[in-house]
Amino acid sequence: MRVVATAGHVDHGKSTLVRALTGMEPDRWAEERRRGMTIDLGFAWTTLPGDDEPVAFVDVPGHERFVTQMLAGVGPVPATMFVVAADSGWMPQSTEHLDALDALGVRDGLLVVTRSDLADPELARDEALEHLAESSLGRLPAVCVSGATGDGLPELRAALSRLVGGLPAPDLDADVRLWVDRAFTVRGAGTVVTGTLGAGTIRVGDELALGSRTVSVRGLQALGESVDPVQAVARVALNLRGVGLDEVGRGDALTTPGKWLRGDVVDVRVGPPRGSDVAVDLPQQVMLHVGSAAVAARVRPLSSEPGAERMVRLTLREPLPLRPGDHALLRDPGAHRVLGGVTVLDVRPPALRRRGAARARAGELAATDGTPDALGELARRRWMPRDELVALGASVPDDVPSAGGWLVDPGWLPTLASRLVAAVAAHAEAQPLDAGLPAKAAARALELPDPRLLDLVLAEPGAASLVAAGGRIRSRDAGGLPEGVRRAVATVRADLADAPFAAPEAYRLAELGLRARELGAAVQAGELLKVGDGIYLAPDAVDVAVARLALLPSPFTLSEARQALGTTRRVAVPLLEYLARQGRTRRDDEGRHALR
Image (cartoon, rainbow, N blue to C red):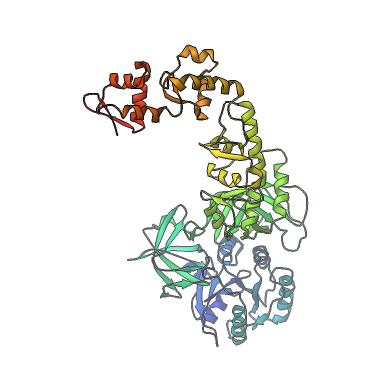
């Protein structure tokens, strides 16, 4: 299926033309038929001669009061049938509709001059073609018809066939984003939504995201018939399971779960309105139209310099599922005018806290074209979750450095390595007794979102002088303990050589200058073993103790263990408790001990 949206001034015969082409009534409401004026979106379809693939029409209202409805109809549609009446010529809403199409970047279309039985169509055709040539549509083919008499309809059908036959093929494997343009209930089925599927494939039973929740597709229809699957491009109706009519409406989007980022702050490029070379000064409050959505937005210009394009940050009243490269438009509803076309550049923009940050940000954005690019996104952000980068629509190369679900800009890793070397050196100078910079502190120093990314930094050639051990990072050639502490520990070790369980008393440790910090550093460095409060032994004390205790009959008492170890109760009690914690001994119900 191919989909075409109508456009043009009110009462120029858009609905009459669709009716003549399809034999279907696009005006769904009795009031529309009574007033002879389209108020809401209408839908109809037909099969063109010599073409097996049907074409569906989204018929939009032409009155200025219903521009929002018109934009909801043309937003997701790739081509337009622009209608101008021969007896009226170019009119104000013709201009606004063309401004909207130009802002959205629509490039495929067909000019149809209606009511050719009421006036010579050539003047209206030539005038319309001049206007169209100044837009993204460029020079369009034109057909003059009469919906009342049928004159020109065969030529129109042939022109439509050429138009839809030249449209680009959709990506059937793309992530789904279906903008809802209508929601209603069907007795016995529940809530049904309709929209134009521009890319991807939907199947019965699929799970789709609706805002923050996940919904199930109960049934699918296209052109009035049940189908499974439905592939882009198509007008499609989805019967949703477990969704109330008050929970979904025009402007909502059904998306592939986990594949789209919903955000309420976006950075965009705003182009000038049609016919101008300079972007307009935007009011503080605007309406953003994208897909079938119309969302109020607050404008923050990132640069005040005049030019053909302007970089702007938009804060949306409601979050939307957007990607870099999306096209939208800004409109001033009070002045009834299109302010310019929008290209989405970043849906996860950084905070602007420092002086001059907005201007710098504008410079960064000016160098991007809105195409989702994994390496480009990482270069701007330095790191980001893999799932988030995929949700931006970017393909992640296999060789991008990753750890813990995070991706890192490979060009940023050398800088991180240099900063880590400096941080480790600074810590060693400030805390000489520490065995190295704790990993969590290192991650904070580098502003890493996850300490697991340290492995990538340590793998860099610039960090080859560092080594990680015991949850700390130190220099490979670090001298370890300061010389004074090293000498004091050596004295303790010498005293323990002959009496391995004669732990030095507190006064002796103090005489040697071994206070809590020095002792902690010695334990961390593996030079001493702490078995209890104030009890420090040589690192091999556990193995020596087990070997001596193995000579005792099992089980043995505390007194027997103390005598075998040649120590005091002050040392024996915490040592046996330490051995039990290490799983080297066990204690029975009578308080006796045995080796495991």
